[in-house]
Amino acid sequence: MLDSWRDGPARRAIEDFVRRTTDPASPEVIPSDERIVVSDNDGTLWCEKPMPIQLDFLVRRLGVLATADPSLRDQQPYRAAYERDIRWMGTAMVKHYRGDDTDLGLLKAAVTSAFDAVEVEEYDRAVRAFFAEADHPTLERPYRTCGFAPMVELLRYLEAHDFTVYIASGGDRDFMRPIAPELYGVPPERVIGSALGIDYRDGQLLYRAEMDFFDDGPEKPVRIWSRIGRRPVIAIGNANGDLPMLEFAGGGLPALRLVVRHDDAEREADDSGGAEDLLARAEQEGWTVVSMKDDWEKVFD
Amino acid sequence: MLDSWRDGPARRAIEDFVRRTTDPASPEVIPSDERIVVSDNDGTLWCEKPMPIQLDFLVRRLGVLATADPSLRDQQPYRAAYERDIRWMGTAMVKHYRGDDTDLGLLKAAVTSAFDAVEVEEYDRAVRAFFAEADHPTLERPYRTCGFAPMVELLRYLEAHDFTVYIASGGDRDFMRPIAPELYGVPPERVIGSALGIDYRDGQLLYRAEMDFFDDGPEKPVRIWSRIGRRPVIAIGNANGDLPMLEFAGGGLPALRLVVRHDDAEREADDSGGAEDLLARAEQEGWTVVSMKDDWEKVFD
Image (cartoon, rainbow over all chains, first blue to last red; front, side):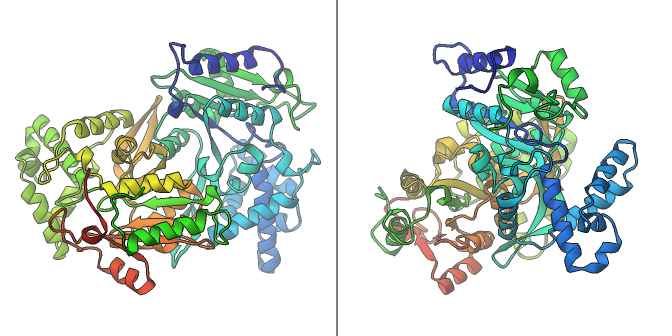
């Protein structure tokens, strides 16, 4: 079933773990209701280079706000969004890595208030409209086809062995929910992610202009417990923010930890920036590293 | 399948709604992935008189703390807990209803800090130990048998028609999770409730001495959305705090709202205190009221 996985240590580690934990005769068998899988999304299940897909959605939203209110065009990041100046966004990130958060601060504030008082089901429709038409800027394919084919195949393989898959992402929960069923076969109730605050008024739920929580780093195990009430036995990530989640896996049960390494300049990207600690820990602990270049027969469908 | 429900308007409303929304030939049929049921717990699925079951658990915990630290016995509510003076707790509630929150404030502060820095899986074991031995003070039966038999039957009936049941309670999420599978057939990932803050440290999750959120009133629809990402089509409650959740049900889909009325002095309790607004709204909107006295053949198994 793992046809887009080349024979190698990663594929063998996956198949071996599944055999050991699902064969009824195995001493390490895990009951099916405890076969919980959590996977990061950006860079793990879908492409996050050159920028997270959600950022494109948000920049378009800021552009819409700047179109409706011309006075916004005098300030960043609205001007950049209105002029489709993606370079400004990239520079904000570069400045951030150099310790200057001025521009990133402006971007965060704008993004947090971009859906102030928007009703959750209206947001859901906006996300669906985005995925119906938006294309990836460099891959030249619709975003809704930017899931990594071997990973989608892996999710189906795990489900066929009675594992239950949750997405545990730093991305916005309600941004992933409308597309996760089509892209990953994961229903909305199994999408865990960052969240804006929400108010209830007269039968409707409206977003607040503030984060409820940012689901990254040590917050990931907290949100996994809050949602599921169990530890995962398989945890999959690609960046330092996934480290606590991988560490949390298992408890008294066997655990499989997978780290997706972006080392494929030709088919995706060769860039492990932001994954240094995770890769070092993986090597130290013997966690399974998945090389996009060596382990995957293809990257996209 | 609803054998402990007497023939009457409540049972007929339930059966009619299920027929209309699950018969493939019905114009009102709801796809099975949208057949979401949310039910309150205290007073709806299990007995909350004379006091919530969780309060008994918490008072025992305060007693353990006061046993370990004698200096605590000089202050309330530790003294009452240590001396098993349940009357003090009752008086705190009576004072609260009269507008004096002094004692209730002491109780809340003690309860919030009662599990400070306790690991979530240790708490889970403490809850299991409580339910393995604790009896209801007046019904003289184990707490784990205090679920309302007709309600458990209703959950099974709905599941047989491809509805998915969630508990949406003001009670502590992690207090209900260990017992919900045995009592209601509801797994931990489908238990929504109030939550303490949690910190992640070195592979473990530890409770903080502060609430993350109190899942009652307008917070219930917020937490239902956060967890499920859909509106429920069946919502069941018994108190004013359930009103927003019942109001939120449906959206563009048909909805069934059930209100459990405690009017059975002989078999449970005749007491609608705290349900006045909900019952008034139910009458105004034609929501289905379930009379424990008239509609249920039996209350407990």
